[in-house]
Image (cartoon, rainbow, N blue to C red; front, side, top):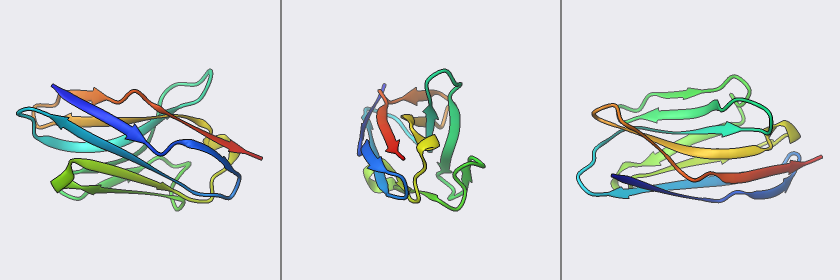
Length: 116
């Protein structure tokens, strides 16, 4: 079982920055990929960014060039640096972890609100 603890959400003005963190813990697990997804009211959950153990990253089209995903494998922690935030980035951001067996785990979500 994997537990995910997210932090770093909040309220920020358009053009500002926020940094999200997600720490994974548990017994007997090995992480393959870590990433972030988001869900705005009335919309489906969408990819923000993912990072694999091999170092590959993938970004949603709407955040490319503005958001940066990074991870500290020794700490089982993934970060999302969000720059040039826009009101349309407002959503609940969820941490996601996929282990070596393909099992996925979700965090509880952290609210990000960008005011215009």
